[in-house]
Length: 332
Image (cartoon, rainbow, N blue to C red; front, side, top):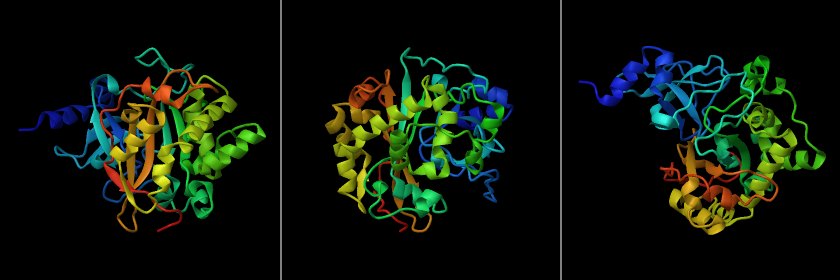
């Protein structure tokens, strides 16, 4: 007899529409390859999941699945397979279908207040899995990313709140192979200079992707969106959280240590709003801390307190990856 969970997956197999009605989603806990085929590992566009992001769950590959078939908006093709160990399945109101391409304004979160996921990368770990990226080939021992968190993105919620008032052609180009074809992000010189340092992925046009997919739903200009994200980044990089990482480069830290550092930096309870995501170094098999995602609630502006934004957010039920190594700069 099938388990209840397998029965749900069997229902999902009937149709994509059925999956949406069942309100079941796959939430990625890490950046994992999202492949077109399980056996061959073929991955057009070199697509990966984004830690903390929710994806429409279409099916499992069998009754006791090893892989889930999910929908990755912007990928070509959009239907992709991921290992079940990459994340977890949610149901009920937590699973929200992707927003249509012609959405004109952000959806209102259930709380009635603006909600966000703020994603911070540990760049040396990211580069262990993406060594061909321009920014990874440019790593230097004295570089900013050797000892600081870097910006992945600031994502308006709820999950699926993507591509607001975005042309179909731009949405179609939103995969890493075509980010250069997306419209440029226009910033004042000082903001551009800081963003290029704090977001090394601008060398691969990550800023264009983040604006098209997430920033267009932020409700502000490109300048304001990235200035707000940079202000939050400064707070993290000036905190005991960064000190925890820099003092433990080459060593392991736990999610409990990370959460306690956030409590110390931004007030009791802040750590409960943090999820830790890990990557696996393909050359050594080491488990590396790759990303931290923070839950934020409330308007974000020039004088916003990161601690207040975190504490206003709902606690996350799981800390994510229990422990991992703080990777040194350069390929190990």
